[in-house]
Length: 102
Image 1 (tube, rainbow, N blue to C red):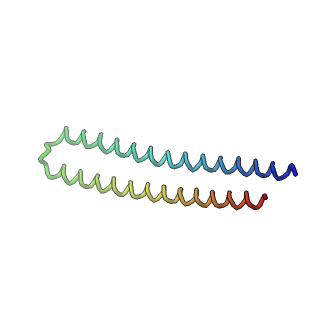
Image 2 (cartoon, rainbow, N blue to C red):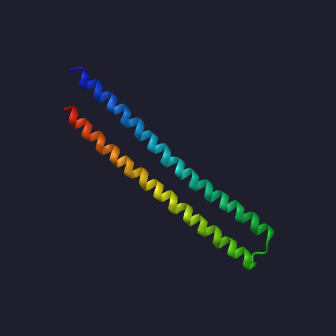
Image 3 (cartoon, rainbow, N blue to C red):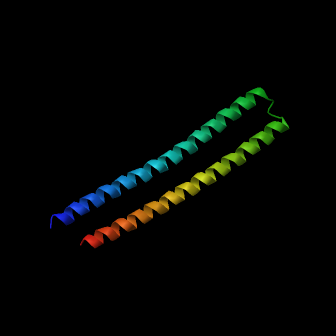
């Protein structure tokens, strides 16, 4: 009898540890997105201060940086979706394991 409650407690502990791990990973992705946005803005401010705003090269640089930004965001969204898939699988495994303990 006491074995099942221990198994359940261990299962729940592992589940919540994994959930926290996934949450930290998602938070790290969001922080990297924000850092990237801040750095891009800082870089463009520096470039604008060095070059006249009407410069064609500046517009090309800005467009290139924007494309890089979009690519980066696409990758972070993909990574976030993968994490969310892992969380769904974790939830399913947890629920199955709980049902097996009954």
